[in-house]
Length: 362
Ligand code: PMV
Image (cartoon, rainbow, N blue to C red; front, side, top):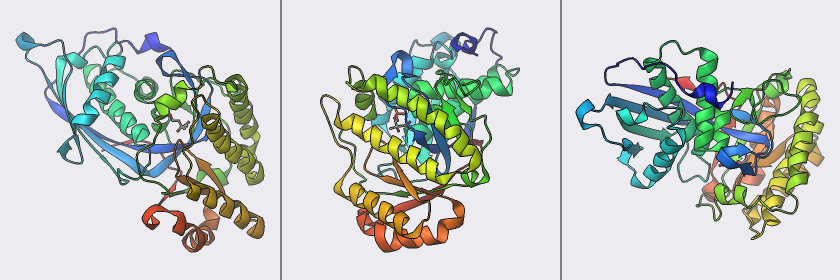
């Protein structure tokens, strides 16, 4: 499927006003997406674990505009946690503009969008992946009502495609387990346009992996990921970095199949540090890690060395640390976190999450 397949060709059905609700999870990348081309096309492929507890719940209420009074504008109101949120509207407006070509019915309707997150909104956890994918799911649910013949595969691919146009990493939040976005020669069906479920064998260990998110800094990021992606244009290490992401994803295939946590750790931690190394070597350069981020990384390394327990970290574009480990070590790792890491978390806060099953309709 390519983008031209996502333009509806039939006449839409007439439908009564109604509402749809979806819950969509966040995800954490193991091989990172950092750098993009025009139209949110990633500069390299990425793979992520879909999370379970960090979710956005979104309701889309829709009613057709009066045919005589149709305006050439998108008409919508946005509510976050029950209250109107004006400062989020330009983001949605931009999203609607980007997807209008593929969803030509958008201007025929008036919308009310209600969204809330299961995680505290000031946690420093990016909510764009779960938030944008939840809106994309609601729009596709409406599209399914307008074009009832739309198949399951089309639904999930177009949803991921639309989510991608909202926020790149949101494309990986529709399916559960491991998800790949971006074309890779060893991943059949992989595409730059939308994410697909990881098609190869996955060892039991990685199907129930745990992710405890240590909230080091809940403040607003100093540099947005949009700006960060942009700084990969003309970055002195860009080409090598993009190649490395291809190589790392290829190297992960046998690791994910065999359950080899030692090799998994080498790839995942290197990816996290490389992401931040790209930020530190951009022009202008910037640092999103905080002193406590480094304290945690050192503690994790010392604990792993001492106990042999295969616990590791990854980072997204911020100071928070995702602690990744196999489910059977949960008790020990939570003890370690409570004894040694909680002091580095803002107000002692962390979120326990795990690999999840993907978005669901409510
Ligand atoms: O989806 P964006 O544009 O916010 O970019 C997210 C980039 C990282 O989280 C740093 C990496 C990734 O692949 O999710």
